[in-house]
Image (cartoon, one colour):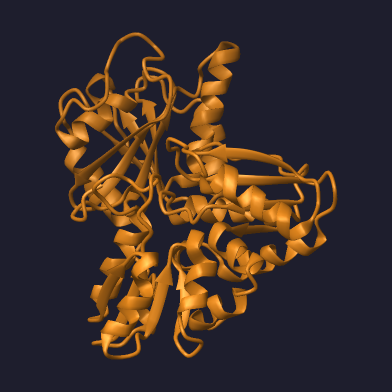
Length: 393
């Protein structure tokens, strides 16, 4: 991920849904002017959701999500359809591609109903208008031809009008900073750190600090004390990687505000108060309880991995209970959460706001407490109140 690239989580997610051979992949290719999606006359060419990051005028950076056909059959086909429906949890704008020579079918109606219930802006795209005798105007519908390019420009303009307005008040940290503030970011460099780059929350936070006209000073945890001495002035804020929260808290003076990247992510795209409340459920865990630890991305796990090794160990040590831990990553997030006593989620930097809030809502609806890595670690170390104080909680 380059510092100049827009992260997937910050792009508008456009989900493309419809039956097999309705022309979903052809529509993607027509809108982008590129052969990005495989097109075939064989029904069911797209077997899994495929995400493609691109620039789409007039919207700008987007993620186009090509999904399997809604009429797929057999046991494997039903699993593919379920995957398509799961994509709705991260979809900002939905396009339902319909074969114009056939019209809207029961499968189309079913997903349109689900889209409406989730209050997702959508368009019905009736493809193959070049093969239709008439193309009458219908509400929320546009007739196009991926084959000839007819009305593709108009389709993109309509999508642009549906795009969610960027929430100007939604910031990572810049809204609590002043011009010329000093912000120290503590970034451990260890075997698990990506070679040659910073991880996404660190990149995003540095950019947001600079947006405020403040200075971002990046240091490692083992050089933090010396960095603070050499600054010549008290920093406005110290932001740390959650894994070294305890060490950093011991170094940073009590009169300097402290928080973590993970806590800022919870504030930025989720619900910080729900996550804080969820951390307090650690006090009520009992022997035999199941704890779900969930990550929004997939990565190569190494020795002392934060999610699968460190957090379970720290939670066991704090509670003194014999707990059962289960793990999910990427798009895998259980629909039925009833077996869990607590969910601990990563900061969700690779998930867009809609999907992160969907996961929080799933837990809330089933009365399962949910928190995130940074908030959980702060609580375990007795520094939660200090770490959320800069954010007005």
